[in-house]
Length: 107
Image (cartoon, rainbow, N blue to C red; front, side):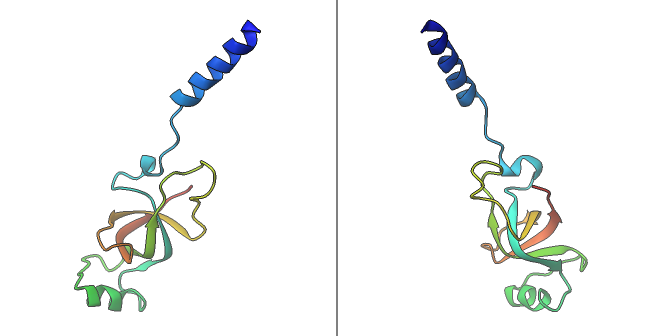
């Protein structure tokens, strides 16, 4: 009986002490984003959106994510998996519509 109690206690302590992997662990600029589309800033789909927002991107080859949402936790439960384009972006300040300076991330 004591052995079972000890084993259960040890497992409970281990579960509490083991942190869940965070999505931004490999993204120093914020949360990893899941974007519906990722294209170059000068592409026919992205350029008009950037112009409409008044955003000037210096590097026309910079990748821009469209319709993005943060992935809060990777690998826990699978509910936050990204079925589109997982990226880490330098500028996520456009409310999820546009994220600028993106780089692909492997989940």
